[in-house]
Image (cartoon, rainbow, N blue to C red):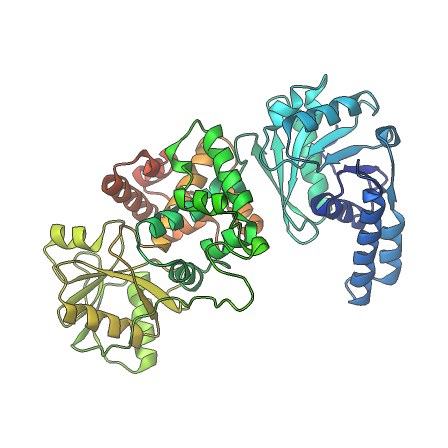
Length: 509
């Protein structure tokens, strides 16, 4: 096998012509390959061909393709009726039902039809590539070719190697995906591959926050968007994906990792599934999408006066951003060194960025009763909202003063119950931890982990790069405090993060 892309004259076959299969066929045809589509449903392949041709025509109308290119790509598509019609294919991609038996049967049947150099690329998102290959006489020809929906628009493709996959096959698929305009990443066949594994904490930590009554769904979503920079909050994203699908993936990963607590499914989501409240597609999920229903607003603290002298402490990213925002707002302040991680003082209130402890615990351990914590932000200069928590020892006047100060700096403030790590900080720490564990276990490289999460699920930053930005030692401390607070193995720290801290380096070296 060559490590160069498949030649354009190579016939690509796509078996299964639902949204994903049709999308993959569109990508391959647009890249110049003859594409055959096959489906066991009557006329489904022919309908898919017409649908893809309509997409090419729309692209031509919008100027994204020339009329000639659209016509040529359309002409490269053909619907076929039986497996024997795929005998001359150089790559066969299956996008059929997520069933191990069905995929094994398909590729076993195809082995008797195709040539010895034909590559099998399964688009499975959750089934072991190793297990699919176990049914084949030549499992070395099989690799995962996992596109993301919608395939024509999403840049990421996971190239997944099973235990028997020939490295040359994986390299050829990698090169081919890149030639098709995609961003491929190599991954090992382990549960969830990269994206479906590393993304679990985004849902899991939000569900834990909700279960503890830290804040309501809309408020947690707003903080993740407006402070964390995520395109969608976790609850609206789960509603869009569908709880039947999202919960099934979580359960699949949890079971595949022998009930590892890090992937523990949520009782809250189980209830939604049991009720048939799958999200947008059924009209109800965390939110109500039925006609006439109103979308709840995030809880935002009423305006307070920033009463008292303002001091900005230290030169951390958060402190400097706060100073810039206050200057822009016309508020005067003085500067002082940072003695214990504090970023600001106003009156009797002392403001810190959360380090994974609750405000109450931090106040007790530091002796600073009027402790107020703010959440992590992707960019404190641009964030429009922050989650905030106060110690139980904190005086109401100090809470009001701290709230007023942050509001004067232009933040909408959402007051959370005093739970460890708030929302964005604990989520980013756990995303970084899971990505680090994937790298540490040889599933993928640091670069692949970050690219996969940016391109596969539109995270504003790769989780490992984010950990480097926040500080690997800070991420380690947040995880350690969460582990101590909850007494759960869920928050165990990846050896990769620990080594980076001990070596005094960033994760990316």
